Length: 320
Image 1: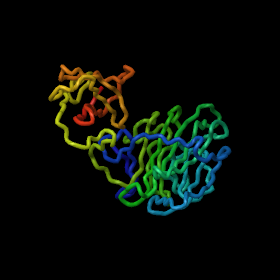
Image 2: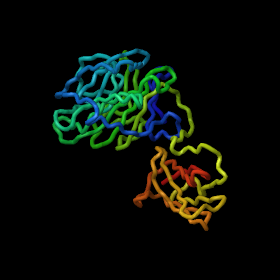
Image 3: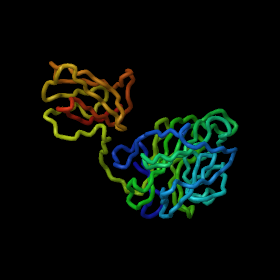
Image 4: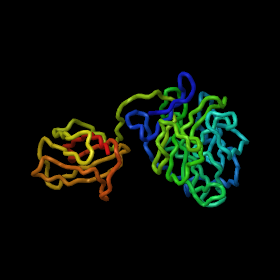
């Protein structure tokens, strides 16, 4: 389930990409900054403040900002701060900077590796800060993660900006803080603090995404555009059993032409498996494996088949 902040009623909520029954759950879509954005030359325990692009409005907890502060230690703050905090706390906390957005707040050292980058992507309406393979202080263990701030053209109920944290690696999140807090340092969300993980927070893993948005939970299934069918189809499919544990049978209501293919997508809209359809057989079986023969994780999957003229889609739930 999503995580509310401690305001009454909650202002921001945190949804991760495992919260698939909620319409506001995010998708992991990495935006690379290395080589295309601007590199910051940050020393150990250093914070710099930069101006946001002209016209980029950053509304955070009801306040407006034209700058953000970026720290080598895995966090940013809306507006200006001189804090260089490397020792992490739980959130909210007056020991943490005001307006903190803690992506991986820990003692990091960007002096080795590709370092810290930022990038404005107007086509995607977002501003991105990336810590690219930054190691923990006194260690060679690196982490690659980023925070994406969408501009106010991306809808939220209050007009506050939508924020997504994304994690390309998960090598050592045993002493980190992940979460946000407001300008009063009294309202916030703690997703992770050291080894303490909120019960609504999925473990940090490669491909994890966490969205912070001022939108109350709404239950539903939000299909990606690439797997939404634009029109009613003359063919249909049913799935049995559903939910399933090991294999599922898809039963078609009519035969399809030779060499027709069925494609199975995960809940993030990524292709998992392509199956050839036997034109003489109206039953198609999926064994819960991807194209490499690996068992896929529990979750929601979508079967789509047909061509540009006749198409159908169905949803199944895999439970291991």
